[in-house]
Image (tube, rainbow, N blue to C red; front, top):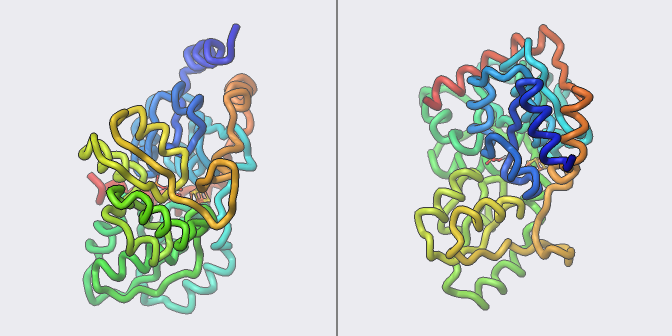
Length: 308
Ligand code: 13P
Ligand code: SF4
C-alpha cells in the first residue's frame, strides 16, 4: 500500500484530521484536510471534532492546538520542527521583562512557547495583529513580543508606541535588499509582496504586506499579476495551484542557495513518511502541563473571539 493510501486509512480508523501550514512540502499540503495560516489553523483546531490532530507545521502551532484541545491527542511528525522566532523569546527572561512593566498589556505573536503565552494578555497572528492592537485603548501601554519586525510595522501603521521584544525570524531576515532591488530592476513589472516578519527595508519595497493567507488572497485577486514573493518559499505551491496564470518569483536571500529562495528548515523537517509514522504510532505527541495550558488558553481564546 502506498503512503498516501495508508495515511487515508489510518486517518479514518483513528478519526484524525491533518492540518498543514502553507510552508509545508507540497506532498503534505496535498494530503492535508486543511492548509492554512496560523490563524486559520488555530480556528480549525478550536472547532474540530476529530479525536486526533496531526499538525504538519512547527511546534508552537501544534502546541496551540493542544492548548485548545487538552483532551485530544495532538501529534507533530517531528519534534525538531521548532521556530527561530519562538526560540528568540525564552520564557524565564520574558517573565522578568513582563514583571518590570506591570502596567503594560502583553500582546504576543502566536510564534512563541506555551509558557510565554501563559504570561500573555492577548495572542495575535500576522492576520489579526492590527485588529488586536486597535482593540486596546489608546492610552494603554503595550508590550509586543517576540517579533520586532511585525511590532515595528504595526507601530508605523497605528502610530502607537509599543515596548518591543527584540526577536526575529531567521527565514524572513534572510532576504537580501541588494538582490531584491536588482531583481526588481530586471523585472520592473513585478510587484513585491511581503510577510510582515520581514525587515523594515524589505517591507518598504512591498505593494502588499500580509499573512501567508493574506498574500495568497492578494495574488488570487490579481490572477494575471506578476509578483516577487518575500516569505518562505513553500507558499508558492498553493499560489501556483490557486492562480496558475500568475507569474511568481521567490525573493532572493543573502546566501546563494540552490532554491534561490528562503526556506524554513524547521517547517521542512516534516516528511510524508514521518507524518504517516506519527499517525500510526500516535507519537510524537505534544504535551502541555495543565497549569500552563489553563493560563495560555485565555489569551488564545481572546484572540479567537476578537477575530470573529
Ligand atoms: P502566518 O500566520 O502568516 O502563516 O505565519 C506563520 C509563520 O510562521 C510565518 O513565518
Ligand atoms: Fe518560525 Fe520563521 Fe519558520 Fe515561521 S518561517 S516557523 S517564524 S522560523
